[in-house]
Each structure stands twice: as C-alpha cells, then as structure tokens.
Amino acid sequence: MNGDDPLFLTRPQVESIHARSLARFGGTEGVREPGLVESALASAQNTWWYAHGDLFAIAATYAYHFAESQAFLDGNKRTAIGSALTFLELNGVTIPPNEETLYDAMIAIAEKRMDKAGLAALFRHLAGSP
Image 1 (cartoon, helix red, strand yellow):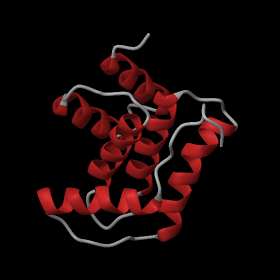
Image 2 (cartoon, helix red, strand yellow; image 1 turned 135 degrees about the horizontal axis):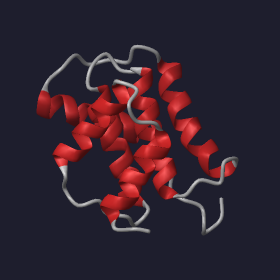
Image 3 (cartoon, rainbow, N blue to C red; image 1 turned 180 degrees about the vertical axis):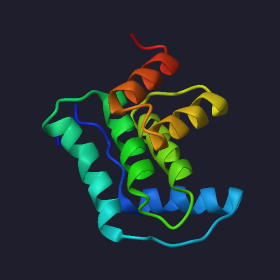
Image 4 (cartoon, rainbow, N blue to C red; image 1 turned 30 degrees about the vertical axis):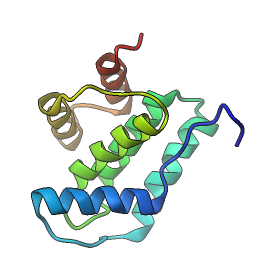
C-alpha cells in the first residue's frame, strides 16, 4: 500500500464492531461461516484495487456483503452499517448521525431494493460529497 491507499478494516476490527452491537442491542454471539467474513473483507479491497471504487463504494461493499452474507449468527445489518461507518471514519469521512436513513438502507438491501451503487450514492449524499 502507498500513502494514497485507504485504511481497510481487519477481521478483529469487524469482530469488535459486532461485539459492541450485540452488547448494545442483544443477540446471539458467534460466526455462522468464517469464510463469509473473510469474503466481505476481501470484496472491499477488491473494490479499491480492481474496480477502482472510491471510499463510498468501499464502505458500501462492506455494508452490502456483511448484510447479505449473514456471516454472523445475529446482528448482521448492524455490523454491516457499523463496518461501513467505521471504514469511512478511519479514512477521514464523517457521516452525520442519521439512524433512520441508515436503518432503512439496510432493510432495502435485505429486501433487494437497494444495491451497492445505491448505497454508495447514499453515503456520498449523507457525507455532503458530490
């Protein structure tokens, strides 16, 4: 990586996001399929390296894949949005608190009414980026 590359999330960071979500909202601890966690992490990096996506596209990739894959026993959508927002924050982008909009976006992904591009556009909009 060079100085222009984003800071990607690690598995321990995502597991911490998941644990904090369960501590706050409840749910069953555990990973349903470890390979799905690794796949979501790799997909985000592939968005940067191969699809040349911006920070918002990478954040959307984290959120989309964690929400869709159901890698954890519980709290997948909360982990998904937490991972996306943490990634953006690590890379200098702040999304103002907007729980209702983000909740609606995660439900839209679960119901297949929103794709990664739509979620990236939403993140861009919420961050006030063109």
